[in-house]
Amino acid sequence: MKSPILHIGYPKTATKWFQNEFYPNVSGVYPVMRKDLFDRLVFTDIYSYSPSHFRGWITGEAGSKRLIICDEILVGGLDIGFGNGEFVLLMSQRLHDTFPDSQVVILIRNQHTALESAYSHYVMAGGTYSPSRFLGIKPMFIKPYMGYNQFSTKLFEYDKLIELYISLFGKDKVHIFLYEDFAENPNRFIALFCNTLQLDAPQGQTLNRLNARYSYIALQIQRFLNRFALGNTPFKQYFINFPSFYKISRSLILAADKYCSFPKYKFDKKVHHWVELRFKESNQCLSQWVSKEKLLRWGYPL
Image (tube, rainbow, N blue to C red; front, side, top):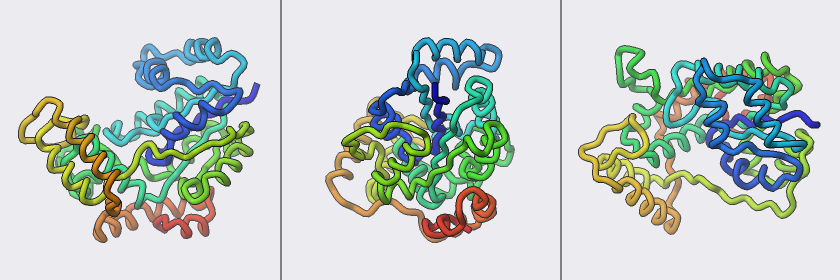
C-alpha cells in the first residue's frame, strides 16, 4: 500500500479546496474527516494520545485505501498562535510517531499576500484590531505570557517548519509547493502535484474558491461592526454584545462584497516594509529548498 500523505498547510494556500473539492474526488484514497482528526489526534491531551490506537483505528476505517490527512491546523492556526511553537512541534511529533513512512506536503505563499489574507480572516472572525496590532508590530502586552495564545507571525518563517519536518521524515519525503504556481495555472499544478505524490488526478476538476479576501471597503465596515458583537475571536475590543449580530453582519457584508467588485484589501506601505524586513532572513534560508529565482518571481521578501 502507498504511504500516507500528510498535507499540513499552510493556511491561506487553498487547503480548504484540497479538503473539500480535490481529495474526496481522488480514487483509491481515504481523506480523514476534520472532526475525527480534531477529536483523535489534534486536541487529544498529551497523557491520552496513543499513536498505535489512532493508527489502528484509522487503518480499520481506511481499509486498503491510501490515507490522506489534510488540515492547516497541523502547522498552527490563524485565530490563535498556539504558544511559541510548542503546538507545531507536538503535531509534527505525533504525525511522525503515528505515520513515520508518510509523504509530507507543504504549500507556502508569499508572506505579503499570506498575511493580508490572514488579517482578512481575522476580521471575518470578528476581529477589531489594526494590522499593526494583529501582526505584533505594536505589541499589546509587556509581559510575554499575556500574549501567549495570540496570532504569531513566527508561523510564516517557512524554513523553520520545513527543516523540522525534514529532520523527522527525511528530505526525500517532504514536498514543497508554491501557492502562486497553483493560482497561476491550477491544471498544470495539479498534474505535477499528482505525479509527485502518485495520485490519480480527478477528471473535470473545477476550482471553486471557498474563502475570499475582503475588499478594503468591506473589511473596514466589518471591522467597525465587530465592535458590537463577540464574534469568533477573543483577541479584540467590543462595546456591547448583541446576540446573532456578528453572524448577520458577516453574511450581509460577504454577500455585498461578492456582488460589488471592489479592490481586495491590501496592507499599506509601512506594513509591507515591515514584512520585507521580517521575513528576509527566513526566505534566504528557504532558498536552499526552493530556487531563489522562483521566490523572486513571486515577490517573496529576499
